[in-house]
Image (cartoon, rainbow, N blue to C red; front, side, top):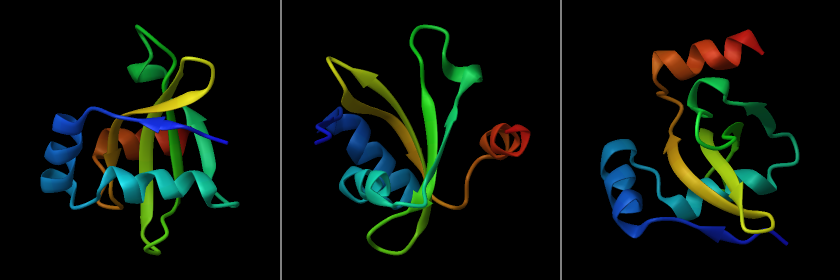
Length: 94
């Protein structure tokens, strides 16, 4: 079982900025066809990953996350399908 944790202030900020809640973003981890990529550009202090998949609201999302404390998933950011150009470039390289 995956345990999710995130900063509530960051969650509110992302909800406003991207229109996607962290609760919806975590549902991407249960998309059996989701694809995960190592996010080298954002992995200076810790290993970060991008996961591309569909949420339980049937929206295509990119979720940036890292593992902490024996496998708990910690969200650093999440983006809707209107992703930033930089993140699109990361996915296109892989």
